[in-house]
Image (cartoon, rainbow over all chains, first blue to last red; front, side, top):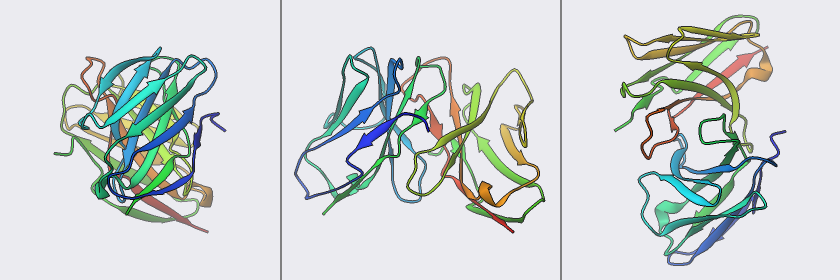
Length: 112
Length: 114
């Protein structure tokens, strides 16, 4: 039991819509990272937040954005959804950016 | 361009035997490596890690070996148990920063038969 939770577990959206995914980190973990895992691929780094500030970003367009809150919760927002955004979205929390990351169960997003 | 490669998509072994999972990387800036295990409908679970200053790290049945000159690491599970059946991801990290925090391979599905 890692203590990292995500909601919702599954979501279906249509192309062009916007979506917000939520993550609750382990208590005391100041760092949250978000990953996209497409079918048959490994998780791909989207961005990381440390103490509510973005602390690194992968190769994802600006329509992927995030927020981190003082209560160890965070959000991933995706605007103008595309079919290729269909994937499992994972959040991971850690004490600091260099500590071991603990993953939540993920949110499976399907874009039709 | 994949910086972390797990070239074998699957492996099947008998219970009690050794499982060897391989991983290759191309980026010489990586200096910390991790293995994660993933069951269906769950997130990846941290298994074991190794720093580039070491060539071996052991934790119970799990041992990770690192060959820096070959840019290759492997995970050994001895003895393998049916509960080890899962998808295993190799991941790498660079302490020198950059936008890639953890870079994952595509994963390998391990099946341990009773």
